[in-house]
Image (cartoon, rainbow, N blue to C red; front, side, top):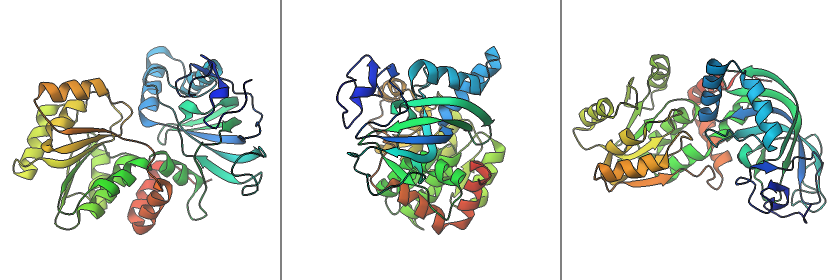
Amino acid sequence: MPPPHPFGLHRSIDPPGVLPQAARRLDATPLALENEIAVSVRALSIDSASFRQLRETETATGEAVGAQIARIVKERGKMQNPVTGSGGMLLGEIAEIGPRHPAAGKLSPGDRIASLVSLTLTPLHLETIGAVHVETERVEVSGTAILFERTLFARLPPDFSEAVALAAFDVAGAPAAVLRDGRPGQTVLVVGTGKAGLLCLAAAREAVGAKGRVLAVEPSPRAAERARALGFADEVFAIDARDPVAMLSAVETATSGALADLVVNVANAPGTEAASVLCARDDGAVLYFGMATSFSAAALGAEGLAKPTRLWIGNGFVPGHDETTLALLRRHPSLSAAFASLAGPPR
């Protein structure tokens, strides 16, 4: 193996020497090198777009979600869905810390952590696959993951269950970006009201203030009602964002034709790109956080619609996003309770 690299290039074996996310296969040997951390993994939080696709494959082929995950990890040395290209995050305990890792002397074996980077770049060796929790998109596993010198992670907070902390960390970049980019008095539209969507609604309400407006689109009547009950959104439309005409009509009516200053797309289904562009002001922005997004469809769709709206790729990392998101949950007990019901039972 080449000398250990801060970004993990030494673990890329197919092809060698590339960034781990770009590699088709990683060396997942479950031993920490001098600048690595080995983590005993207990659970994977699969990203929503990937989990949806795995479920669709299970229905079409009969191959269970757990079996698909085991196959992908065995083939690739990481959990990177070959269809969506996305992965998720992990939860576990520190097993070993290399002496040259920046956390050496600051962490101890047994400390509970969650990764803050995608499984698509994390070497992962699985020994067993346990229960697959469909409602929370969480999979119980046993195995070992390797964190590089520059891999972000967070200690689990004492005031949240593991399930809530893992789910919050998984989508923390989205609400942190809304808090960063939203402005008082603006209109923000959130597309999708799953875990990321609920956090974004709360963040949007705080960002735009009493004079701003917060709108949401959610095709599931149950999820739409849950979003309404939290009270962050002025209106929640139970329509499918894959129907751009219906979505545009609803948003035009709600805004008297002004449309949204900021559209935050956290949908887990493909085909929502054009509707998001249509509902944004020409001088507004669309922030795509959903991993089901086709960025070519977004760009070409905006061109075809003659919309100069700015299109942003949601970066899962915003400095301090883990603590920002936990603080958001602490400020809103009702949001924390709703989020806990989506994240799953405590452990």
